[in-house]
Length: 274
Image (cartoon, rainbow, N blue to C red; front, side, top):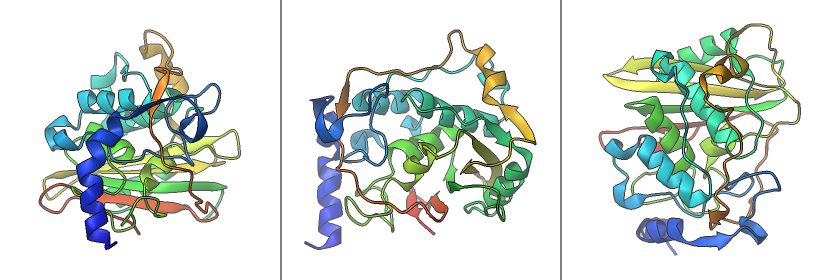
């Protein structure tokens, strides 16, 4: 089967695929004490195709996709409007993690923020530090808001007819769900550290993040621990008891840091991978 035909078929099936629900068993199950679909498993298709327009790339769209995956709604902190866009992105990434039962990223590093800011200014993935970490990844998106970036990274990262993911020509390809896998990185150490950057390029928002395992915590500018007091209850696992069908786990090498970005080209975002 030719790739374009496969992508068109996935696009036409994506809504129904998201709505297919199964009991938490077999290949679709998350580990005990976890919710939703976790790497190395990924969603079977992008979520919410019928409404995949920029105006729904917000909390309502994210919550709709989280519910289909078996994860409860986003509960934002009371100081959300006072946070910088970079801090908001960090909080969103951690909520995607802890609501699925994964440990939070400890904080934002000043050094990594500089790298991420440089990437955002160039509409590209951040560069990695020369060393001092075990594993990790870099992600970028050109979107109207950080909520839209989260939506694209987490719920619109597979093959479909709306986005042209050059590294995801068909379901199961190695580049599918690369952003999501980085956000949900498990890591091998007890320390995950991030860096974030935002810029305005040609009138559009540009967001870039690094998530690194085992990186230094010596120069943190913002921490998850300091943000917890702004939640009425501490963010934690939010299972709904059921999950949408997932793809079978596919092998992905983690020895080299990964870079993934969403690039808009005058319409629905085109996803390219470096």
